[in-house]
Structure formats: C-alpha cells, structure tokens
Length: 277
Image (tube, rainbow, N blue to C red; front, side, top):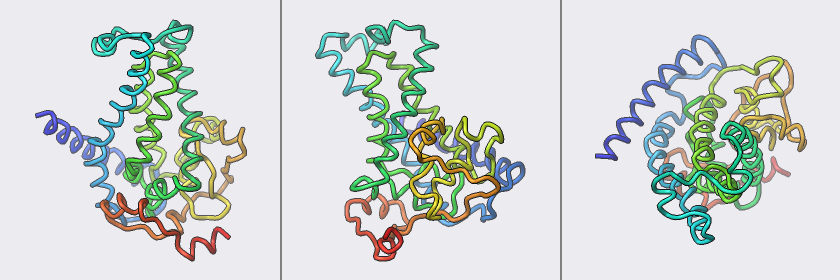
C-alpha cells in the first residue's frame, strides 16, 4: 500500500512539474532550442520513477547512523527519535529554530560545495559523470544522479550537523528544499537574476557547470550561494554569454541500467584524455 502511494505521488509530481516547466522553459524562459522529448528523456523518466525509492532509504540512513552514535553516547534515546521529542543538544540545539535553520542551510551548502568538488576528481568522478552525461539539459536532467553520489551527498550534509547538536528535523528539511531547487537550476532558461547573479545560484550559473567548454570545467559547484565559488576561485559567469554545449568527453551508456553499472567498470576514453591533457 505504501509503495503504491509512493508511485502515485511520483507520477503526479512528474505530471505537475512537466506542465510547470513546459510553461517555464517553452513560454516564459525560452532557453536553448531542443525537442520536448529530447535525447535521454526516457532515461531521465526512469530515474524520476526509481530514484525516490533509493532516496527514501538514503534519508533514513542519513539519520539512523548519526542517531545511533548519539544513542550510544547517551545524548538521547531511541524513543527520543521515534517520538520526535529529541530536538538537538548543546549550545547549537538550544538556539531558536529560525537561527538554526539559517545556520544549517548555509552549512549544508558549504558542505555540498566541497563534496561536489570531490566528485569532480579521482575515483568519485565516474559516479558523478552519470549526472553530467545529459547532452540536452533541462529540469528533468536534475534527477540523473547515481545512488552512490546521492548517498555520499546526503550523509556528508546531514550526519555532521546532527552530530554537532542541530535539530535533526530542521537538518533533514534541507533535502527536499535542495532537491527542488536543483530541479529549477537545471531548467532550460537563460535566467541569471541580474544584480543577484553573484548572490544566489541561478539556472545560468549551474548550466555553466554542465558545459563541456574548457573554460567552464570544474566551476560553479555551489547549490545555493555562489559566494563559495567566489571565495574558493571556482566562479564562472561570463556576461552576455550562455552555456550551450553539455555532456562529458567520456563514453557513457544511454540507458538507466548501463549508467548504474558504468562507474564500476569505468574506462576513460582516449579522446577525453586528450582533451584533459
């Protein structure tokens, strides 16, 4: 019964957001020209349907593991989490919820910036390359995320803050917020918010991150505040230009199951090595 309800909500969400972004991308925004049923559309629909089942479990682990450590340390009890009577500890947990929320969202974005950067190098890149493999990028491409990538992100962002004493439920509220905002950031529109282009992440800001153009590589990692990219030298937002060339230089299977397995048998192409060199 619960799974049927989840499937129903997933399909309703897909229909509603498809209508919303059809208007945003085709009527209001009018970004890069590409078909509605563009390359990779069916693969991303499969991600949309299957990902919530992964994510639901990942969110559970995101609180179970740090919660277990807090119980072992006798900071709280299992019942405290089950009944939701535990609301944090120490000086951080004693703060007003609105102040905790401000701090939590800034810290989650900071942690997300660095985990994102880590996924752009070494052995983690093959898992993140799945997300970057979209060649016709739009809102639906945001859900093309490998479960390993998703697990590391959620654990890295939630566990430390819960262990520091922040309210666990305010901390976990960041997951749906950043997910919805990421959907917007991938939208096929040339919006940069004008004078706020360096204050808050925009579709242009994030779509440059997906560009195959050499000057845009490893840029714009933040999910909400471009300040982190400005601070750490990874900010790229040329005025009067918009990203057009998306995808990766490495080979990647087109289908969902091929992309699930690809990072475990990853072989960088000679063409990609030549470009990197």
